[in-house]
Amino acid sequence: MEEANGAVGKTGPKNKKLKRGGWNLLVLGILSVLVAVTTTSVSLAIYHNSGDIYLDRSRPGYLPDEGEIEDDDTDVEYKMEKSGKIDMKVLEEYLENLDIEVKAIDSYDKPFGASALSNERLGIPTE
Amino acid sequence: MPKIKILLLGLICSLAVGTPALAINEVQETAVKERCDTIKEALKETQKEDARARVYLGAFYEKILTDFITPLNVRLVENNLSTPELVENQNKIADTRTLFMSDFVNYQQDLEELTMMNCREKTEDFYNKLIKVRQKRKIVEQDTLKMRNLISEHVKLANQIKGKL
Image (cartoon, rainbow over all chains, first blue to last red):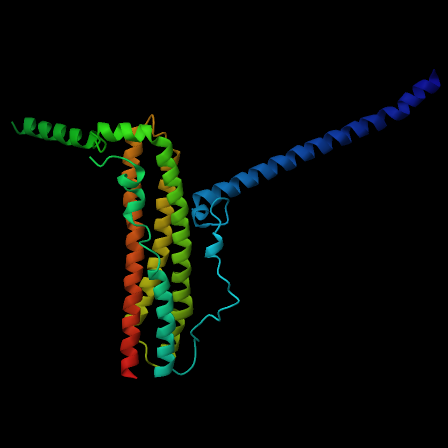
């Protein structure tokens, strides 16, 4: 009986310690999840409220189409050097290359035109 | 007598301010209710098209400013060929680019709110919001037109310098 009591006396605190350790681990786990959820929520709120979400095309449903992705390896892109002599040839080359960019802008048909949200497109009678 | 006039004027003013403008008629209201889902789909499609346009134009604006206009102006200063008009034009282009981004975000926020509205139950509110979104879209369109004019102005000024060489 004494032996039995002694055994209980020895294993009791050990069991308590184990139980306490398990409890601490559980609390740590819950706290970690809470911190992760809170920081993620705050990040998403900032991402949304700052408007960055509307400038980001990597979000699902907004990824660029295959045709939009340019093969950057084929073209050597022009870039004006910040220093050096300026003569007629340099400016002509500059204006020629700038014209290519301007034409690319003009090739986009009426960006943000009124027709996309017009009553006609949405099927709402005008009068 | 003047007191009565003031009271009447106040009453008219409060009525004018308090009464919302009826932008939608009965036929339109019925159409919006019936086509609610289709309209929302079209709005979401527009959201995607706009994101595409914003990225496309934004990339060119960035490229023109950082690879063309800014280095040219730096080089012109170095060669004592710079003009105040060219520098002013560069600043205007940079400002318009920033404005284009913020106006776009502003417009998209309202467009998203519109897509989340209940067009069957709050049809009039939905239509009024649609009108507001159209106005914000118009501002973004004006930014792109302003940007295009400023780029043309830069080309004109650069050609003037070329003519002087």
